[in-house]
Image (cartoon, rainbow, N blue to C red; front, side, top):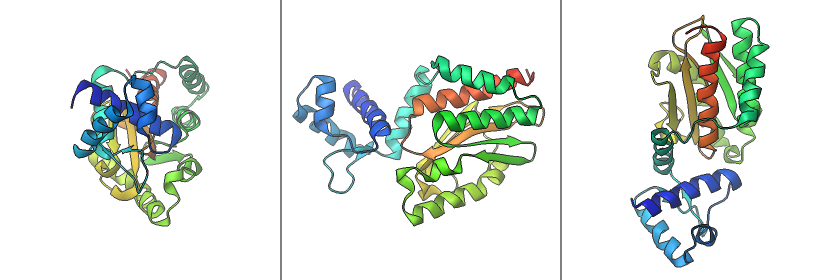
Length: 236
């Protein structure tokens, strides 16, 4: 992939996350200062490589799971997901500071993630999985088809045992679409941060949402939530 193709893919991912409709060549042509024909040629190559696809008869393109994975890896390698939202940082810090008991602090943090990301939030507390924001998840336009809702429900039903069995060991893990071990057809992305708590050295906090989302912001928020929880709960 050329540098320009990588930047076009990045623009498609970010634009699609914002507007929830396929991204056309004319919009990108204005952004990159080149002709629509040039953009169409680059998009054709990205499609051939499997990073984007054309849904139905739309003239625009949307990212594939492979395209999202490339984008997320790029953010991770460059630190592009590091949180730089002062208001979000203050909101997380305030809710954590008012928590009191560790369980309440973790729950407050999950609820804050729900408010900031508009996804479903979750965290492990001892042997239980706390979840909040289910209506956010099923309110997304991607989940209007009954078959897909069933896949999402299947993923949620099996998420707790999978977390304890798999025990992801990275400070921040991102499972995109069919990378999820269960509910592969749900069209969801799971973004989780491992942190140490009074309950376990491998506690988890994160969000579940559609593959179409602002990974840059959500990854930064989830990573910061895990790190700040460790500090707030004095598990260092």
